[in-house]
Length: 359
Image (cartoon, rainbow, N blue to C red; front, side, top):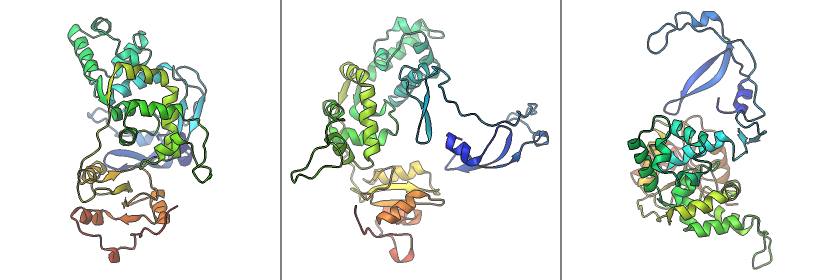
């Protein structure tokens, strides 16, 4: 139940009895409402520790979708499947921004509770404030002895040396994970080049040498040359950084941001891009690792530049898109053969589509 659209699709209410299945490796997913739950459904139930379940059922009521942020009362907006607070100064957003940054840079000493304390005590009002903290600041907080505070400051100092990909990924921009952040950093090479693209985000589209109007302006065109980056993602990167430009500029002066090293991984999948859809027998993370270790690249969306789509059970729209674009589609067994340098048996599978067309 990760978004309002899913609640609406399932027509689910508080107090319903639902069917749950296991998706992927561990994720429990509610797939349907069975009926309204009854007190008898709780009979002979126990908690995981063996204690008798004595709680009562909640009243059967509709789930109300909030219209205002519960923390800062800013009007919420819908962005695709998500409902977001757009107030960058919202206390909850600040806390999550700090926590996301620390997790992305593996700052284990700053967890959820400490991030909340740093923000609530006014010690951190923006990301750059993290790098202005000292031992006295941190040790003044609840349950933070001098030794723990010292370790936090040491971690922050160590995190000052990072690649451009890590820097971009750690902002937690919508839709921009580590994979895309690394690809963008490899393309633009330096923080200065990235900031130049941000400054050009609203530039006029312009025309090519033959006078034909481009589809996008220069900044968007450069980013959409990257595998897995379309216009929407390019805009999310440019607009997201523009909204946070004060923090970006200040952090770029506080930190030592090195260019992203171009990948030198080689293998018989070198130059091939993969997208994965559906349920597979191997964990998805393991398949991604196999692709990367053999020189391939994994992207999150289907485009005409995609080399292969690995399709498992219950594949959705990605499979249809791949068929329409003529992308080669592999079953999990065919992917295994490809790893062993065997060409998939095209005659044995009706799922494989030859690459027939480009946009």
